[in-house]
Amino acid sequence: EGGTVNVAAGTYAESVMLNKRLTLDGAGDGNTAADTILDPTNLTTGLTVAASGLDATNRVVVRDLRVRNADVQDIFFDSTVSFVTLENLTAVEAGDGILTGIGLRLSSPSISDLRLSNLELRNNLNAMRVGEQTSVNGLLIEDSTFADNVFGMTVYASNLVTDNETDFTNVTIEDSVFSNNTQKGLYFEKINN
Image (cartoon, rainbow, N blue to C red):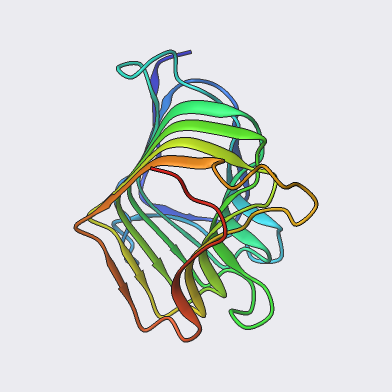
């Protein structure tokens, strides 16, 4: 654990599970033969992040790749994680973009210290979705684009719980663009600080 996996340029028709602390380093997030592209067409998820870093300097890092065409979600967090960085990633065209499809889905019980830097989330039903039961403490979104989706970023609270309104806290969004999202650019049912 703690090493680097370099992923060569090319298109990979598969789903990847990241369940160890490491750096997953692609060749680029564009759409050319010189880039690293995960294309999990007919698969539920492109990339699942299920590992944590040790601390703020020993992080799980995923960078320089494109994920496209997953049936449900391109990038998925389904486990409690902390100290994770996603940088220079593109997540596009998940699902059909009308009834299904999430670029980045946070659906784990707890996420802390998540950094999203230079992400491009386009042509999805929902660019980024934080689930009803997900608690996030420490989220930085910087230099990112949420565009041409139905929803840019949605953060849901459970209507079955009356005290989860603050389960989305210590959030910073800077130098990022939310544009041409047809229903909502930013939608929050819970937020604090």
